Length: 165
Image: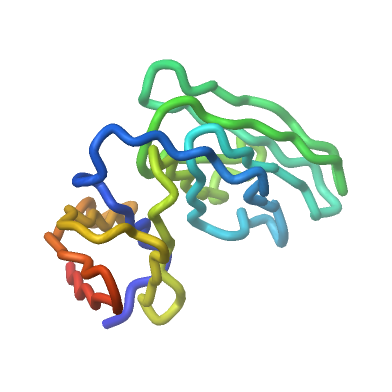
């Protein structure tokens, strides 16, 4: 009943307002021949730091579907350093693979605004600071696709949104 690793975001309703990206990078590590975490989310312009904590060579290979986002195909040595990249355009469920270990896969989501989250192991999420208004919330899962809901955020208090696949 609970679904982890779902990217949830405010998809529509914010208008054309620009939001400065966080200066804190999001880390996507290679640990135990897995990408950890499996799904991450960043804002346009926010850095993703790719690290390799394993004692083996890994590869970061991704081909974005949105023109203008960088294609990445680099190797990282065992216990290697950090490679940092950012993205210029929103994109959902961008796959990341390791050419050396084909079972390794992760997904990067790039948001135009700071109002997003990834569900935890219980399927829960929290998006803080959304201004009052009516919005379309989107939930994207790597296999099941996208579900949307309309939510109205009051000036004070919180709102609960239940999405199911």
